[in-house]
Length: 410
Image (cartoon, rainbow, N blue to C red):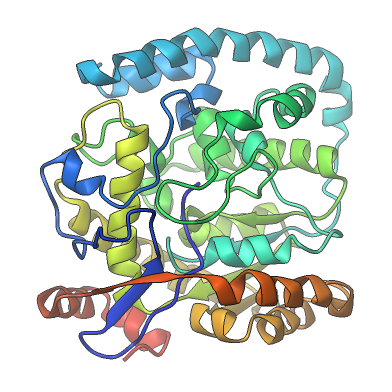
């Protein structure tokens, strides 16, 4: 998912937050203010080809139809080609799913995780993707790939084909930043759960002009135990299939898991957690921009972007209210905190500390790869600076006061 890029920022009051420089360097962020025109919201985003797959292409026919029903089929005429394309593709998913079940059902029934999973959690745009990408540079570790998350029903039989022949379907970079794309790149498993038909806040992107959906799945508050257990079982089955493919311990990243750690810790008793925080004054405008960019690319409507700011504020409040309460029930030796600012300022030292604290193995074997990344990629990133207006800073300081205080961004 287009989530977190390699970004940097100042942390002073009325500061200027920096984000990865978009192709259109003249396009400035609007600081998260809502706009009613897609043209304004689309400025500064990388182009996303019409033929490139969307999140919905990995669904089975019934899941796809249910998604359309949930939005009361309120599809904008300009998005009808997308609807028709997904509708034509989902039957192939059903066929390939049947073939995979025929070939792999016995093997998957006896599948096991190859080592303790590590969950990276934290708000969108807080550095989860950067940390994810750096950790899986260690070849002893693995992660769900982009293809596995987009085609969770049948990747065991189809991934090789798409990696070899269909790389052209993806753009070179994600729409909202300069992070590279590719079927083999690490990806967040929430997209797999979405395609599998599980409730997910990401369903909002299909019909962004309507009410928010599945916000209760940010923290499971109000969700009955049976539904939670079904969700956890589905996640486990997906991760077992990934583990069957990679044969290595998994590094799993999804911001949506932040308010679910209690249940993840129970479902995976040996799991470890890395929580990453970032200056909220950078998170806020960046996340507003994230949702606008994703809505432009993924929506079945022409997005108006109304209510984005309130959505961003509410999600962080809900996720971290749950996170702070739930982590009390988790052994402190299983969870560590990392600051984005430390990760970008001293990536080698930060990664070494993570490997040591969570006992992930010898860091020296992966250290040269991290150092190479620092020299060849980290230092060459260009950033786009844009100021957070004082009234917006005051607003999030009040709404996110606990986050500011807990993680030292006073």
